[in-house]
Image (cartoon, rainbow, N blue to C red):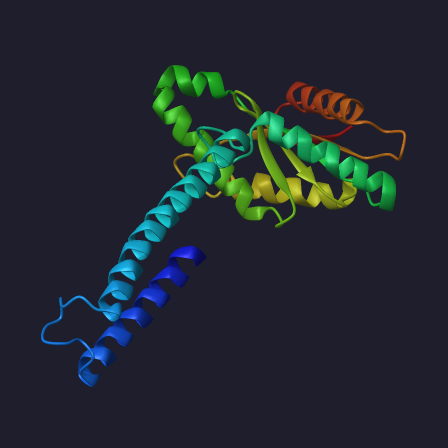
Length: 227
């Protein structure tokens, strides 16, 4: 974009110079009379067309690269990250915590009875429900928090620098935002765990969060359990 802007500014300056030469009477008998000025204007125009073409190609390439990066890191249906991108963010956050302290919490979220929704209302309604769920959840998360689709109707939320007590407050906000009476509102079970120290790993945190999620399901669903 900067290249195109610079070329357009230079071309405008060239046109203003051409106008000045016409007003000063340096164009001869007519505007197309061969002269050094005419050669300069024609050369500048040809160079402008070439540079604008290159600029347009670069902008198209940059736009395509941005779209491909988004597709590579985000879920194809919802605004959430995909599993690979979210796990990478988790690894980066745990590595940061090992250096500076203040580790993250993880939440595993699973929509209750989602298969029944698909069976009774159709998969399009189910997809709309997933998009609604992610949108409502993202609305109550902080800017540094990350949400990703772990698989099917199961999602994961990374809460950097957050202990279990603060993470429980986030879980309560998620439950509350999904209980306002919207037609696509759903109930969700949440398994929560926090980073326990430098020896803790992502695999161990995922195992604890997953076990806590299953306990939430076993205890009646639509609740949060800390593991």
